Length: 481
Image (cartoon, rainbow, N blue to C red; front, side, top):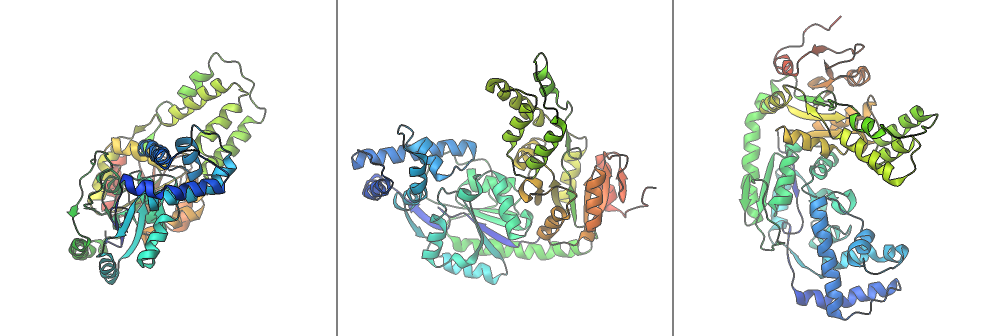
């Protein structure tokens, strides 16, 4: 797949940074002044306040590196830095972003790698676009630094964990950035300084190329988990790597031009995986309990399910509402029901032939995508696929939870095509529901039905997943009567 976009990490990649105790203590008066503006008076020496901020943020970093969740600044300062104090949420909310910005800009000395302007100009001259994917707590630090360096206009999109809510190496932020850039991840390169965040995350999201640039700052975490395609010390060394990738693309482009079908998109549930014991844990949870279900439970459950699949209600709130529809009010029992529903959703099996077929399609150069209706974060599904050996092959993931509508709404299929840069006639959709296959067909996709409903109408039908490979290699046959 042709290289189109180069994404960069910020700290340690575009810019060098370092810190020490003296730098931190020197900046503390600015923190004190910010606290006082919200009528928060911390009766601490500069040394003690430095320790309070440093230890609190370090504790938060340990937590978010394990959870991969980026909290809002007000939550960080309340739950980690000032957890022993009791200040109003309103007071903290009014200064939290400023405190976080101060932490990221005064506790660390930051400067642009001097070769960056030359490198960015060279990449632009190659016809490649550029973007940023950065782990950060502040929404201002990265844009402000890029503006100060005079290079911000090179980058679109600029994707920050402080806005997105999940951190590298969670692959979702890489997929999100590629979607904003309107390119498949298989057309992206990523340049970062950390293997355990940058290289691992871009690999898990199916990036075409990942490059590690060395940086002296050590955060103490074991830096492992993946192998970069290249390792450099100076950003100028990136140029020949990209030039080589572009030359290789010219060879493969000739092969791709001869192929009628260039992309294969899949529904996920009941196509790639299934739940062998549907609702077993929730049924066991209900056994022996006395409950009084809502008279309109079926209708209300459908409504909240739609909200969850459109991303308007988060998954655990969705589970809670389902449990409460049975009339439960005891918090311990409600939590037990939530856990049962969560376990049911996470108990899956992969269909026979899926790993081998998916990997073979990827090896043959097809663009691989998923178009899914889901209340789950799709990274949960990617973990299932990773365990089965085909998690890193996906170029595009379009989720109802992220887009805000469900199949057969045409916008889901159209979003996939825009990102792929393909026409519907060059794309196949593999599904099982009559409605989703009809939606794909109306947009113009070729359609293949697997594990299909009796009323499903498609261009082609398969009974074994492995039949997909020879089907795509040949011509589509007669439509089933």
